[in-house]
Length: 193
Image (cartoon, rainbow, N blue to C red):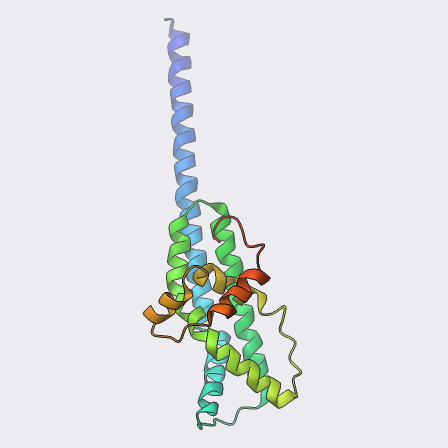
């Protein structure tokens, strides 16, 4: 082996090492980004305007039990759509992480943070929709705003909603409600679903 051959071998080994190191660093960075996205989606759901919306909406089921905090329909409707759109952002972010297929543990982490929130609002959203409908004589058009929440619900609960809700100490949805969503979103396939 000549000196030039030895230099070529050393250079090739160094280049392979650099590629391996760069790939590892990229993976570490992507993992960090995925977990940061999961954390920020949860923060969005639990703070700021969304927290205010959740507080307003929590008064609606209380009203049906006799506790009335005097909220007007505009506040309730604005809060309802604010929370629905937040769930849409959570669903979209979750799908973004899941489709990259780099860090499935970031998806598991996000799911663990938002599962209770999604379950908790299942029944409460029904109360809110009823209240808005009662006060506006049925004038609520939320079919598109609900898509992100409903898809997130299916991703988290489609396989066993009843036992998961019971573990969370919440009233589970009726099986036909879950089946209706399965049929409505039969197109849900692919990573993370």
